[in-house]
Amino acid sequence: MTRKQITFLFLNVGHFFDHLFMLIFATVVALALAREWQMSYAELILYATPGFIAFGVCAIPAGWIADKWNRPGMMVIFFVGIGLGSISTALAQSPLQIGVGLFFIGLFAAIYHPVGIAMVVHGRQKTGIPLAINGIFGNMGVACAALFTGLLIDLSGWRLAFALPGAVCMLIGATYAAFVYVNRGAGAEETRSSEVAQQAAVNTLKLDKPTLIRVFAIILFSTAIGGLIFQSTTFALPKIFAERIRELAGTATLVGWYAFIVFAVAAFAQLVVGYLVDHCSIRTVFAFVAGLQAVFFALMPGLTGPAALVVAIAFMLLVFGQIPINDVLVGRIARSEWRSRVYAVRYIVTFSVMASALPLIAWLHTTWGFAALFVVMTVAASCIFVAVLMLPRTSAVTAQASRTAAL
Image 1 (cartoon, one colour):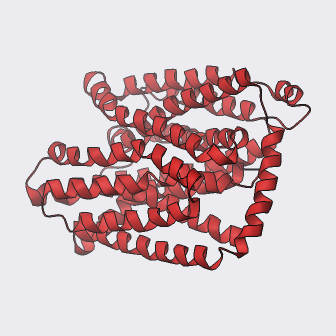
Image 2 (image 1 turned 90 degrees about the vertical axis):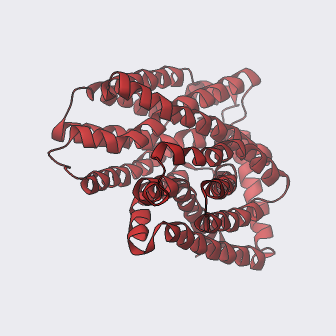
Image 3 (image 1 turned 60 degrees about the horizontal axis):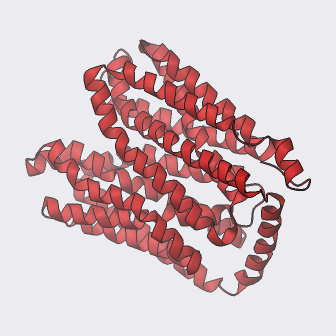
């Protein structure tokens, strides 16, 4: 393997761990901690809030430090820091201590998206497939969190569910640090070559200021609404299955497996979308994905049984498939020297909106049921579809950028 391929592998593993660690506590609370500490789920879940806030808010300083200092160095800090945070959480003896541990997990987890994604697209002219592969690893972290945590709880208790992944992540961090140190000289020329190639790609996508502002506004808007859709569907899907496919999933274990299978299958939609955005107009692909989301969300109210399962698979394929599109847009129009900060802004918008999705789900489900949630999702996906139509067409960008490559 080349140095670039090994780096890409480390970045993919990092994305997997980033999402895995952020969801360990949810399973620990549900399956073990509430019973062991004699506290309610609602009481304990509050201690995860600072970690999720840090996960979003700290993305901007992490991106700024990476741009000003060193991206590989920040990734070493990510691996080691999130591992230490997880191990410290395993040692907690009180809710306050576990809250502190979760805060540090969120703090170091915030490093990945602005730094890791910037490294994935660095030096590449075609970024769709690399971002899709990287996204699959992140979504597999989402899918595997409940399974791995449940297994480790059954093996040795909830503390092992934090300690073992933490130790593995620190080991990977040490390995990555050694790799970066050994290749620090060998990678210098490769880095310069990548900069030249990347600068060429940036020059081909130079836009005038009004167009650039419009594209960034659409990115931030679709990011915010897309974050609401992603969090709502991924968080609510197990409960949706428990209510709507009871004849197929009559136990909690079966519900968990159905959710895992849907998430795992849907993750690979990013490969298809990644290929399409590398070979077709992003505007067309984005509009197609958003439009189909609206269609399938509109079909979901009232469905039960196998029909509900099929439609759920369809809309999750589209929800996961949309993930790399905005990252590709940012990678093509943002200059390398401030790309991490742009990604940081994008992800702080995503995670801030995602935090508001949980009370929305609770309110809609309590008041009207999940049918109302799907109506809201239909409207949200339709709004993204309309916004995407405002992106400049390929021919317009080509003419504006002096016959250069377009979106």
